[in-house]
Structures are given as C-alpha cells and as structure tokens.
Image (cartoon, rainbow, N blue to C red; front, side, top):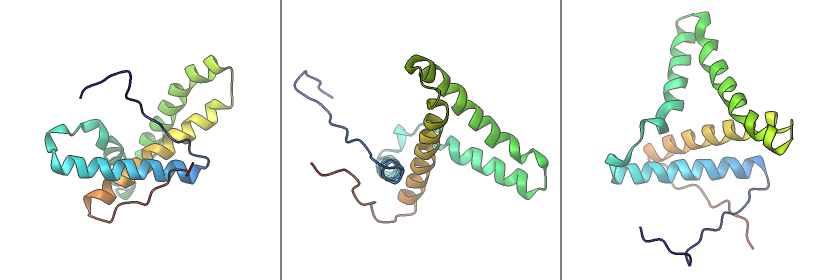
Length: 130
C-alpha cells in the first residue's frame, strides 16, 4: 500500500452503544468476507472470543462450576487493560466505560464474523450523515 501525507482516513464517531455495536458487527462481517477470499491472512486472535465462549459452554454443559473462570478472566483482562487509560486521563469512570466498550466491540465483531461466515446479507451502514 502506498502511503503519502495526502491520504487520510475519516472515522465517524458513534453517538450510541447501538451505533458502536453496528460498527463492530459490520467490521466483523467484512473481515469474514475478506478471509474467505484470502484465507492466508487469518489471525488466530480474531477467533479467540469464540474459543472462550466454546470453553465456557462446554464447562457449563458438563456441570462443572469452573465455567465461571473464562468470563471472569476476560473481564479482569478488560479492567486491567483500562487502568492505564483511566490513570492517564484521570477519569475513574473509564474503569467502567472502557471495558464496556471493549466488551461491546469484541461481541459485535465476533457476531459479525459469524454473520459473514453463514452468508447473511451485509449489515446496513451505521455512519452518521454529515
């Protein structure tokens, strides 16, 4: 890809959590479409949420009380990841809002991956009109 100072990217802010969810699901959908066309570009990290969900479901279905461990570890990772940002911005509220936003993006991206894999139509555009 050729880069120059003349090229730029405009990212539209999402005003609502539902807008953020649509962004993530649309990104996941088109990522799947890209991976179907170019399978060599897949990263195992993109499928970790599905692995975590599968482990949790298997543990819960087997009657094990250990099913709670993967979701708790995930939430702790989100919380610990948010701490430096909360400190840098001097905003304790970020300890709640940033994990929520990351959870929403991870969930919506994973749903979009599945959406694209089973061949549903493309999600509608959620960008704000200028």
